[in-house]
Amino acid sequence: MSFLAKVFIYPLNSLILADLVERFGHKPLTMMSQIREKVTGLSLDSPPMNITSEDPKLGLKYAAIEVPAGVRGRMSLMGPLIEQTEAAIIVENPPANFGCIGCNRTNELIKYLIRSKGVPVLEVKYPESDDEARDFVNKIAEFLETLPREKPEENEKAKEEGLPEKEGKE
Image (cartoon, rainbow, N blue to C red; front, top):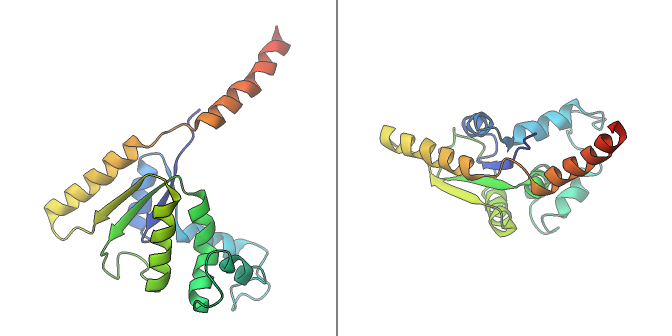
């Protein structure tokens, strides 16, 4: 059984990157999944506010009280994604319509946290021509192919769990 790598993508709501990551058999960590979980969950008592009483506390885990509330709010959604990250793709200088640009302070914090996490990171420049677009996709494809498809600790657990079953059958 193959386990997928969880790949953080930046910009966070880039459907292009999310689709590309999925095509290579990995799980994209996206803002859309966090928002979906938030609005379909039972935790929102007052949907116009779109936050729970725990969200501001969670945001403080990633950003100090002195930073703007918007940074803490965004980090309450994005911080858990960063914690799950096993690899990342960061697109530098994307146009505003490529994905959520949001608050630049949050974006810089996200990139800093990803880079300091110690996971494999591919940083690519947003393409501005057809040739650059082909190179862009090829670089991402090569990066995604280098990521491990199986996690050793989960593979070992699966083997260990399989041993008692074999013993019981004999």
